[in-house]
Image (cartoon, rainbow over all chains, first blue to last red; front, side):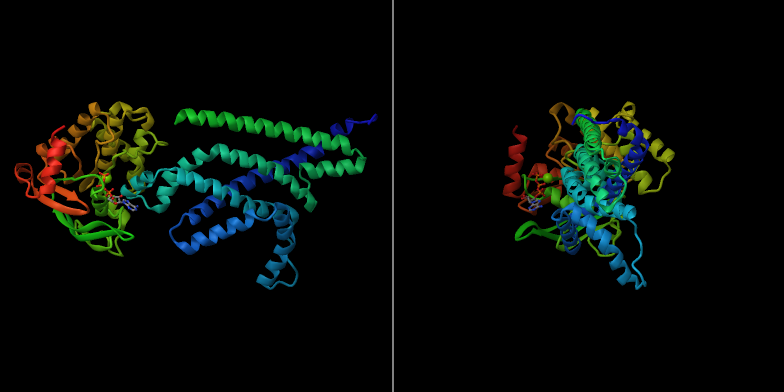
Length: 228
Length: 242
Ligand SMILES: Nc1ncnc2c1ncn2[C@@H]1O[C@H](COP(=O)(O)OP(=O)(O)OP(=O)(O)O)[C@@H](O)[C@H]1O
Ligand SMILES: [Mg+2]
């Protein structure tokens, strides 16, 4: 332990920053896509049309019972083959690890966001929707203008907590050899044989960021609590 | 204007409405009363299709509410409804509450809708509250905003479901005053309420419901003078003696 060399971090900083940029980007895209898709799933689960509700519930339960890592691998390796058999192409189309990661995370996170948004929608009293319908708004208008904004606001702290989990989970894509923040650190660590320094650095950065995010979420929760 | 013909409704095997028939003519004010659980809310919600029913027919201004091809949003846009718990949208300002459906359903411009909203807030005495949020208003003010919101759609009839029963006593009159004005203006109204003072003042007819049935449907004078049914007499003596 005597000869730790933290200068390696300074030298690798541009590369690490690039990795962090991808990590943040994937987190944001997966969050936005996951919330949108998850909200649609939640509406489907709450639909009075049973087949739709069952299909959505099946999807959510499936996703929530498979480890994320498996979903990532499956999608990466199986999706091209599936696409090939669907389109009848000669060779499996190249989706690429980065694009594959975007799609996988949206599909996976949507299952969790679905459950959050479902609870949020159910937290809004039925009378609110009734009032919207009574004014002549249709189903989508009632959802978009009345129910979902309130549900989203009520669930914001929980959504942010899930976003922090997502931010950490994104590191799994390094196993597809994608250069996210962790992936970048792994590569430097191996190239320069500076494993301890790099992993310490990664841990500290994750801790600081997640700590800042969760105290932000807590503060937001207090603010929203005052508004009601 | 509103025709209710022999409607019945069940929740599973529990019958909430039994063969209910009545009508409300243009400009008529009909008060619906009866004990808790007698089906008053259910009946009034059948008029704008917020509740479905298994038998019978409801026709509003020539349109059958329960029929398959009916454009319910379009019909509802023309029937105002006021709820016991106000149901203002808490995430929107008072003015936005008034303009939302005008813009989204009637296709008015925001300027038109805002002008209309301002005029109606003025009418219910709340012009200064437009930028506030519902949570910042008293219950009586909220209910007056809710009435203004319904009126903003230029309804051909108004439904009220116990509009004053969630209010503190000192706020009941400010809401009733608005409703009395409306009635005097010739608005067609169906009002579920136990405010018999209001009924005496402006109702043309009074319905008394019990256990899902319309037990009494009489002109105001007859209802208060000599209700025919035992149940209505008991009910009246209960609510008038406190
Ligand atoms: N979703 C439902 N499922 C089963 N029963 C219901 C449902 N909604 C209402 N009911 C029952 O239907 C009956 C009529 O209800 P309704 O709300 O119309 O009564 P009400 O006369 O408006 O009573 P209140 O004065 O308490 O408002 C009640 O016995 C109620 O318990
Ligand atoms: Mg009721």
